[in-house]
Image 1 (tube, rainbow, N blue to C red):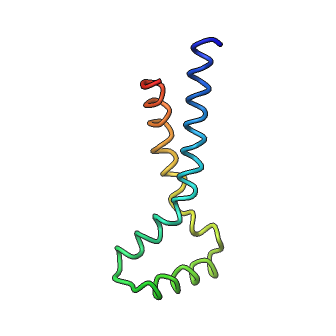
Image 2 (cartoon, helix red, strand yellow):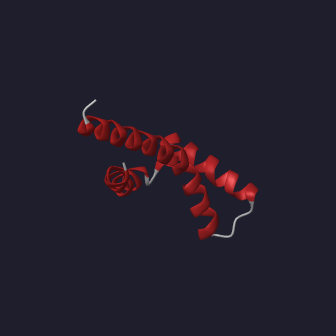
Length: 84
């Protein structure tokens, strides 16, 4: 296989893995941020999440996904190409 094609395949695989990982981690980061911004117990965090989902929908848990992807994808693609 051509070396350039191999690098592109590796880069695309790394970017895809990053997108999946960030999509899974995004709601957890939102919960962590809520816990750090206001001193909440675990029960109160659960109530805040339920309230947010009830009022704004399940996609309210994905706030910040776009900026996270815009921050991480270019670096991931460049870094992986440099180390391949």
